[in-house]
Image 1: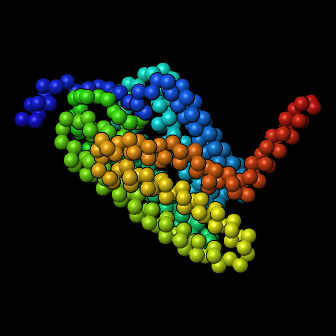
Image 2 (image 1 turned 90 degrees about the vertical axis):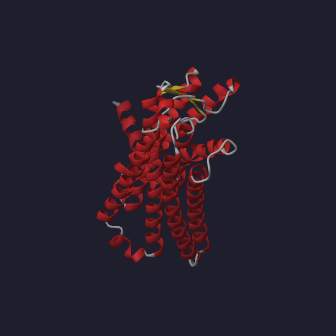
Image 3 (image 1 turned 120 degrees about the vertical axis):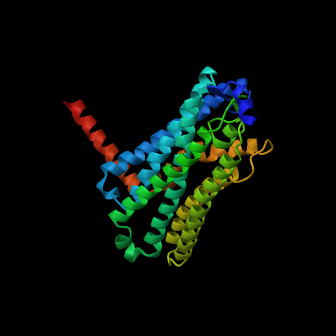
Length: 321
């Protein structure tokens, strides 16, 4: 009977992303705000990639994972923000069904990958600080490659399953998605078919992809902080603690946002809160990560100064010719 009812309705071919609501007076201001965030995100992450590739001193496991994180954040921001910026600028919020599912697919894959990657990075820091004499032996090139491959493959496999469930849903109106990008629960809310299995699978996968990596990350940093507290130098202890605490704050906000959005029941009362938390892990985290993890490091600052000085000398030589 349900299938007959669906057959009498016309399947929609596009969605309307409502974004942040009807705020025409703030549209230009929001465009500038998100444009600045997008530019800072792209510049910061691409700069990390370039510096690590160029400077041989940065060819270590830690920076290997940081390059992977920067590549991930660059892809994630490019997947979401350009469409949002275009809607602010032109007022056109329509997105085709195919483009919407494609955006959701890559967003979900990259979000799951980032959960696993942050856990791998915390394990790397745990070995470096808590077992420094065994670091070179444990964090070998082969292990780093295996961890990186496992992280990316796991992230893409998990969301491929979820995307397959959503693709098989029937969408026959309404077509307004109350979100600023195509996400699972706002999409499922528009479906006129049974979404129980897809919703349960989404919450389960989000729980599995975020909570265990978060607990592993939290445990790693607790061990790191305990080790740091044993450092005799007050200055060294304070500096190391500051770095680790900032890392822990960022990953806590990231994991907690994902758990809040995808594990708590999705309803009209929580949709605005879900949208706010989505901004944290899709927009703000990619912008903050390069500064928190890389740009404050002495090695990165030194590499950046060397490249700037080299380019300055080349420019002077060209001018003198």
